[in-house]
Length: 83
Image 1: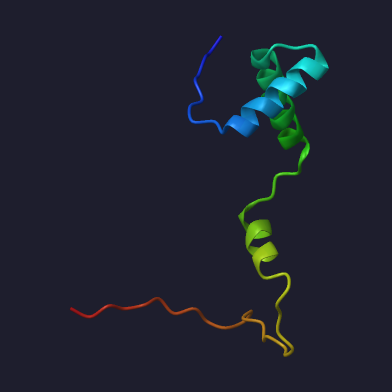
Image 2: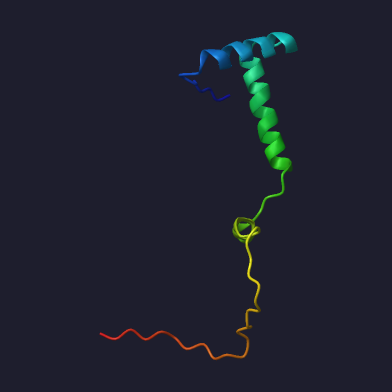
């Protein structure tokens, strides 16, 4: 099993973690493992959005109030760079 150390935790966070562990009948170490396991499990349940979904969510509140013409049927010309 892997191990890691978390440094510089605020005293209030440590105290709350100790209380939570005591309330659940765990050691602090077991409580942290449980918290991490649950957090990652919840993450798996969330639907994964692709890049398009992420971009669409950025612009969901905005919008345009005019028609955007389609580009179908237009010839696409390659860009020519001159030397």
